Amino acid sequence: YLPLARRHALMRTLGQLKVVETYDDLVEIAEDEDENTYVRTYALESASSMENDTIIPVLLDLFNHAEPRLRVAVVQGLSNFLETNADAESVVLEAFKDNHASVRMKAAEIAKEKKLTKAMPYLIYRAKNDSDKKIVYECYNAIANINNSESVEFLNTIITNSKMNETARAKAVDAVLEYKVTA
Image (tube, rainbow, N blue to C red):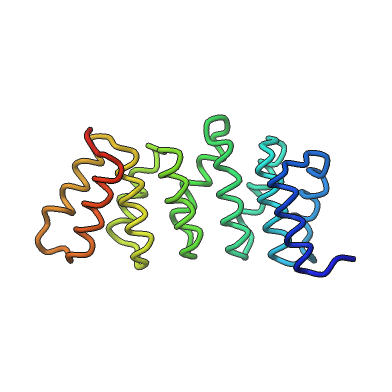
């Protein structure tokens, strides 16, 4: 029996190396309610990274788990299936409404990374209303990376609004410059 730290490392390494022979074991560990949360999370991340679509029902089921770390891993895992599975996309969009900031942040990161146009209403809502400024600024980046006419309009509104604080306006300018918003 391995100590906890080694089990953490093992779960992560199996995913990094994509040891597909361990896929079923990783899924079993991820679903094990008696297992340590971090071990479960790393097992779920590793199994998801193998991009085997049989993980989708497991991910969808675990999105309702009380533990936010698992929900973050679910959102990350489902990002591998956005183009091929409507349920995956729905859950990633639903993550913008999560009560835990780390889950909302992961949704914004995925929307940015995948240029998820369907996330635009959620990104704009979070950019205007989230209590966590890191999420607000990540939403600016995601909106900028999507780079469509809606991106230009929203970011321009932030930049030109003299009632906005200087940090928010500067972060919007940074996003426009970094992602070369031109739409």
